[in-house]
Image (cartoon, rainbow, N blue to C red):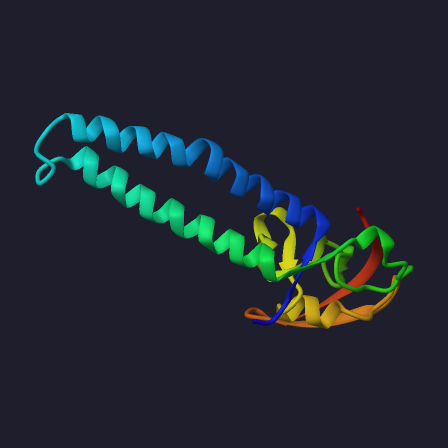
Length: 159
């Protein structure tokens, strides 16, 4: 299987989720199944079936996280020493060329991408357009609403 990049911070978040699922959620589900079994007939026991369904989702997520972490290539972005050049892990502040609207993204691995939190996947079209650029560069990014032009205002790296 191919190794996937992951920031050190992203790896910590995924490990925390995995630990929570194993130590908190899994025991709660086991308890819920035991309580539902105590009610008797399992054929028409909605609580039992709901708990078993939740158990399936949880076990699937645990397996997914374990596999992802085992194949992840964890990259400490604080050690990259890329200067003002945009590479994996960079937090990039952009300014929309026409409107002056600011936007900030961090370029992260596929597993940790979350656009609501400003984390975009390194394989996304936006990240691919930004990689290699430096502060002050103008970047044209093709979006569903057409080509948008941005100026790279700043590039930062965090641990």
